[in-house]
Length: 454
Image (cartoon, rainbow, N blue to C red; front, side, top):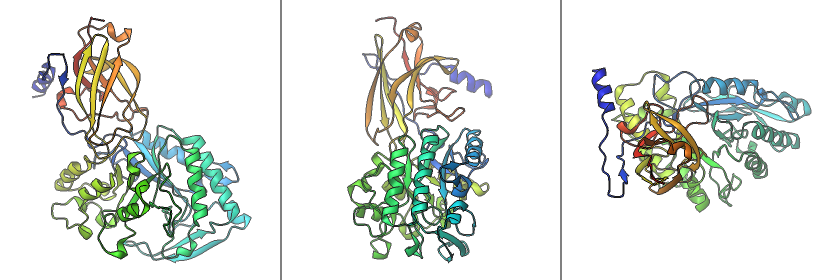
């Protein structure tokens, strides 16, 4: 049987070719674990449970900041390297307050006199109530420390290929920018703005996501409708869509709409991520699942344009085949998906067209490589200045590339394109094209040949 499969793969693929040499390339769904999208587990070896390309990790600020402008990065480095060893990128968040945890606030701040309020947090359902320690966010010493930390974090990690996304964290319970039900303890709008200013200043490459969309008149949150920051909905499919009920106006989509066009359209330039609500872990993908307040996973993904979501349920243990099958089908529709629709060689120029068949753009600046096919791989590859980011859903873009002398040495050989992951050993971005066009290294055979004509 193995010999038969190999024989079939070796047979040339007959694709529709027009008179001008343009080849149409058939569509097939892209892999569910394409990089920088899909379901995200907490860090650890879980590849056998459900396909994924990223892992999530929390860290207390006290692990990283030990004094004014004094930092220790070893614990974050250890986690980033561990996750990268599995070919995955990291999503991480730094927190100062977490129910049931004593750490978080750097000790040097309390030694300086920063006030800390200890209280019983009842907003921990479906888990038991736990004590939480909330710092005085208005204290100038704490505010200065946050500025110093974000600047140092950006200097070290902005553009690091091990990092996929960062959720802003730092403020509020779990770093989620709220202290509900003790709302009076939350950082003021001024402090929130200072944190957002710092992230925008020091992160120009790695996307940073905020918990709550906010317009100019949002009561508890500083306006972020005009920020270069994304969003993460951490009550996904539980408190996401509009219900028509006034008490649900804080849900994610209503909050975006009340924030205005800048919030509603943010997904076009900055990513939307989040976490499936714990009450729904795993079972949200069951055939007989009854959506909470009629919020289906598919509708929530479609309306938020979500690219990635944490879901502990699918990674806690081996799930049923029903859940896995349904999850693969629905998760595959998250984020970007790129179908190479056609390709053509005219003299020494390669042209090809790519359509984004997903529901969101690709938010990282990864470049395309062009080479020839040899041994079912992309070889003699040349890095181009072509990229895929900012291609919106259902839009197409035509790419043109002048074949350099290196590639013109291979007349009659088929050309291929690839998008390598800048993370060493990371999963390459794979296109939504038929299996027979996919090369072993993740590149795509364009089924057009190097011409011997100039």
